[in-house]
Length: 476
Ligand code: GDP
Image 1 (cartoon, rainbow, N blue to C red):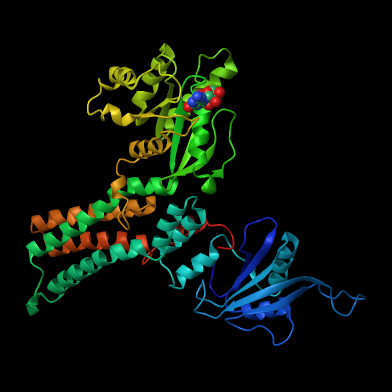
Image 2 (cartoon, rainbow, N blue to C red):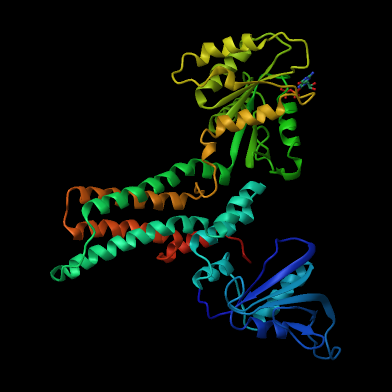
């Protein structure tokens, strides 16, 4: 990839729609657009929307000028005031795939190259308009499924991760400069950072970086969402509760096609986090081989979920099957129990259920308070559903109070680099404590700084860029 060539791609999603946009970026984009689009009057104007036409080229022996294929609006952004910081032209056609394909073809015929996935954003990065964390945030924003995810990504797109790291990088740079000066000008008696100052500064940076790493647990949930397995014997109201949980957020629910008959499902949003329901159609005794495979799959999915919801029927006494299911799911991790059908006459009281749970939970050390796990619900009347959501969130995200602005990172790559930086800082801290030679300390400080630089993309390896930008779609 070089920035000299002009690239082109359809920037809107595949398929038909009201509008489809073809985007050009690079030195020749204005010239190419002018050849591909026929403008009525004054030609292509910059920083304005201009009306134009896509015209089929005249054929030999055909009519003198070709036939009109579409009416388009062309927007031109002069460098550096554009997405990529290069000259960018966006041709908004009607969303007809054949027309969009044709416009791209014509641009290529006029000298543009088909863009690679993520190449527009890569160019924005290479041209210094955004840093690496901002580029990653653009991808996260595009992929967001809840408004909260979008909000977090938008903050990072503004540079929240980089600005959080900036003061630390500055301090490391200053320390390095002072130590370098101490070495290079040893005879000139320049002031050199004292040991206590060095260790104190390193500790402060480490403490803050550690906070970010701890926040990743929450950040990962924000980015990837949770999965919830709903377990319970037949007819206790699993599907009804499932629909209730989905219902409340109908507006932001997205359907994801099921992969198999019995695991599957839909995603809702709870507290801004995408919550994927893993439907576990009966983990009953299998009667044949096929059912055995189904049951094994369900069990696997239940174990892999972030947390489990056991549904019991309060209009029925406790059964052996309830006990068996409870014993099965309890050791797997966070568990919420819904005492459903609370609108019907009660045959399983809260106290009763608590003591059943205590038999299993009580044996565990550090067991969270039993009450915290149980919610009385009615899928019929909707009673207890908000509490159920609260409990689900509380059980899945113990560190939810960490979810404050800028206090957490969402990206695994960022966590790895911050940990790398922390390891180097720890080494530097030890070197300082042992009053090691400055050169040794300097090496560690350079390593710590380098990891943070790689995170924001100040120094980077091409293969890292390849990995990051290849996960974008074409046209971004
Ligand atoms: P599943 O087999 O566990 O998925 O149970 P369903 O969700 O299919 O519900 C079984 C039956 O119980 C259906 O007839 C539901 O309408 C009914 N049901 C579910 N939840 C409640 C509830 O909270 N109250 C009452 N009265 N009926 C419910």
